[in-house]
Picture 1 (cartoon, rainbow, N blue to C red):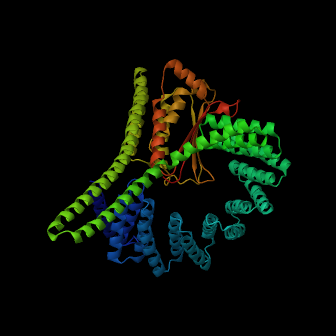
Picture 2 (cartoon, rainbow, N blue to C red):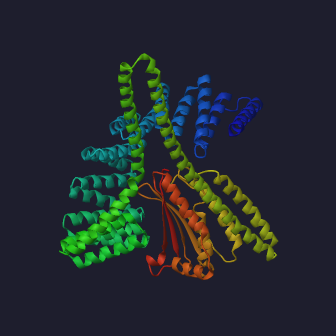
Picture 3 (spheres, rainbow, N blue to C red):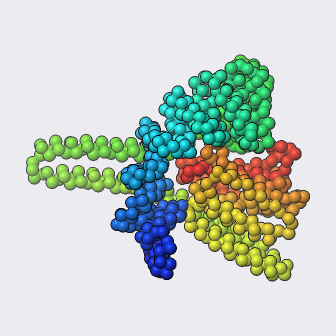
Length: 635
């Protein structure tokens, strides 16, 4: 049905274009076929998020039209677009095929900027595959082209990629050369962001080589630049890195000074993982200074934070720190106790991480073992066939066929079982979303009922109109496993508009979105964040606050992840739980949201994290709740 609709859309679109062309007599610079190709390519990109197969099919039609009409410039663009479609579909072989076709066409057309960019795209695929030398080969070709045409704007990103690949190959001297090239261009073009990236990478590379003086110089130069940008996260990270270098060079007083600066910033930011990082370095510094009492206090604080947030990774590090402390102070019984805890929790985490890989390896092992048996039995059958009478040869052949049939059935059963498990996870995701939608609609219709009972018919009509628009969005999104962050924000804005009509007290909603985030590229499960805003409205008692406010913030982190936080200034988690227990209420939507994140993490190689923090735990003078998602930029 979707393909028929698309086909009718393109026929009507093309027909209307022909009529317009006849009326306007050449006002458009493109002929009819070029317009059709452009429309197809635009539609292909638009469908990339919602249906990758449809996107590929539409682009394939564009390629066929471009080849038939011999429009080489659009054909090259169509090849490049199709390569991108296959890249997002994780079909890297097809992606490589189309990008190489695009590369040939762009060279024929003399479009050297596109030749360079396409070479870089091919390098990216080789990097994904771990073929670093081939990736460097294409990146070097991109550098050569951009240098020849004096396209300096694109060079820093290429050199950074080449430097990162060199680090992965443990070739630190070559990586240092690439980062210095980035720094030189960034200084010439007065690009502060590229200067900071280059200096930070130079610091890391020099630190890996124990060139502490050079690393310290790079970090200090980066710090001067960052102080003018207002990036508190980068500032705290640099203070931490400089403190580590001073500790490793036994400049303990300077190390303590910089770690204190990092701690002060991270305390204000309220991120428990950032706090654990600086507490860990404070522990190492106290241990190096043989201030064992202070070291024990730091590791105790680490224990409380890690346990409160149920962070298994930091629990492992904390047990290792206890072991290190008690071993150095001669408390060997305690050291042994924490060593066993460290080993126990480490083994359980390792077991969980490798359980799925183990199952895959066992399946492959069983298949290989079965193949070996087939080969062995086939050889035995051949030997027997030479010894037995020709009249019995058909019996041997039947046995071999039966064995192969059994093997085929076993293998088919295993494959179908794996497919069924994956399909079951997808159905679980849809069931959870279908539970959330009635829950949300129930709350919305209850609000309408309240308005009708209060004889506020105008307000009820407005509420129903807004609700209809929102429900349409929710129903459209519920068909998709994941949607773009832009769609999620659009749904949130409509939901918030409804809530403002519902509540009789002034409530301020603030959006703070990092301009560097690609809202169309980043994808999350639909209606994932709405329960946390609903929870703030229902359980935070914001009507009792003088200036009630909910802050929705999206920030691009240095490690490439995106932080999506929802913060209110209500009564906080602990007080809210007490009141909910008194009222015998359970937050169904919140539990469903957590279950959906768990399913997302099971199916995806990249993990999404959720923290819900009572702000009183960070600062006793603060009140409210912070719900924070850490969203991977790749699904």
